[in-house]
Length: 119
Image (tube, rainbow, N blue to C red; front, side, top):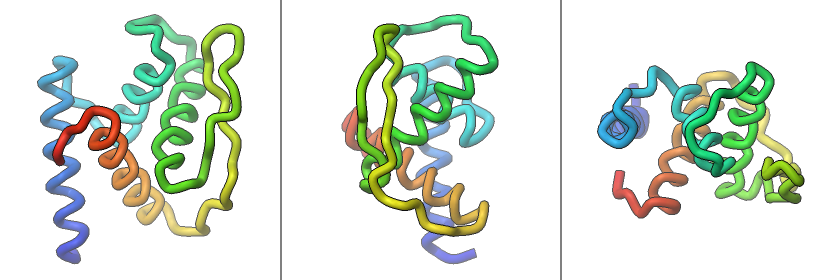
């Protein structure tokens, strides 16, 4: 494993520990963190969501974190308060492992920029 990958995993572990302190439960994986970001970005607080809404929350989170790298920008917020994003730059064609690394890096940047958390 490269030093860069080790650094990413150390920072990721630190984020998960911080989220556990903040929300009372440690997210199991990247999807759990993305779900939390989606709920936060929706801004409706704790809620019971349908399976489809949970998928939409994950999409909101992915678009939000990838917006920091210039891939998406907010298009509009609908009448129910759900944000809608548009793709503005093609995503790179990379394998699943690299996709996960990219998302983790962007999630870390999200928490650093949105909450001024040094990770």
